[in-house]
Amino acid sequence: MDKSWMEKRRGIREYFEGVNQFVEFAAPSARNGKIYCPCVKCVNLLIQPLNVVREHCWASGMLKNYKVWNFHGESAAATPATECGSSHVQETQNPYGDFHGMLHDLCPPHEIPPEPMEEGPTAQRSDEGPNDDAKKFYKMVDDVDKPLYEGCTKFSIFSAIVVLFQLKTLCGWTNKSFTLLLQVLMDMLPSDAKLPKDHYEAKKIVRDLGLGYEKIHACPNDCMLFWKQNVNLEACPCCKASRWKTNEASVASKHASSTKGKKKAAKILRWFPLKPRLQRLFLSPDLASSMKWHVNGRTDDGLMRHPADSDAWKIWVQPFRNYEY
View 1: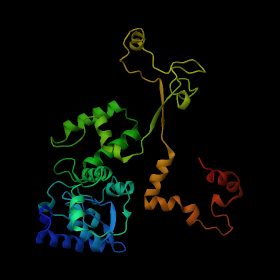
View 2: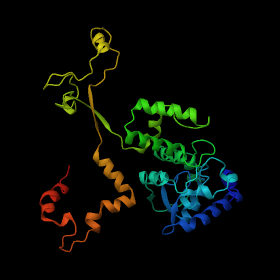
View 3: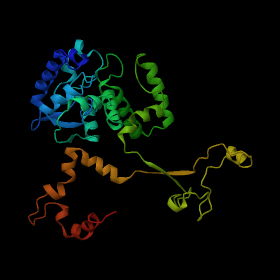
View 4: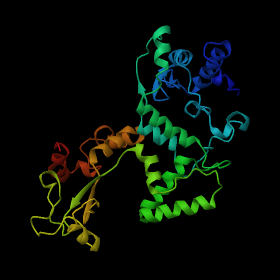
């Protein structure tokens, strides 16, 4: 399918006909007459009716780097190389996961009522482009589409880093070992491979996925946390142990007049907040249905079909479910 019209100037006949061609192609994948809108304002985050998508693409312009219409029923494997070149990764039966689906679970589409596209103000607003959150999202989508190196069909930049981070977690690799692995892979792979140079650079790429953690200093003997009202304490009030690591360098710097060196905590607790993780589970339609099974899917006919039907569950578990943390 010829997509050269996407590079043309908006307003010419060829561009209008190309937008109509896109809408006709995406129509079979529509749900209730609505599809993802690929204009520069909606950036495939908003679901709009077909006629609104056509008006948005006419007025605001279509994303120029959206060469493979993977959100509208097209796969990269089915696209000839003359159209998309080597800038996209084949996504047929990826054994490492559906990364496009993961990103859309992270930033689910929103349905908004169609708004009429005015000619004057629209032309001005289209120059502004997407907001910062949309840019971050589409940057990740772009990394999902870009191959790790020219000719690579199994890994994109994004999927390679996510898979390596997963192995790091499962195998207990240190940050230093992860950096060494990246450096070895860079020597093994072709020179155009786009792997980050170290752990810090790799972490920046996947940082926008969210679900981070908070570092809280702890007593070396596990007496307390240096948190809230105790955040400024230098030693544990219970066992008098120092909050900081003590070594020859720190002892020497203690007597020095300058204290430019950064202190290192003796022990750190990494707190993973529960609420954003529950919210992330509910973002996925498949996981959300499982999360709500106790309320919507469980058969409640007085018979023992599940532990939730027992008296013990109702006495001990149900009160905690109703408790507001």
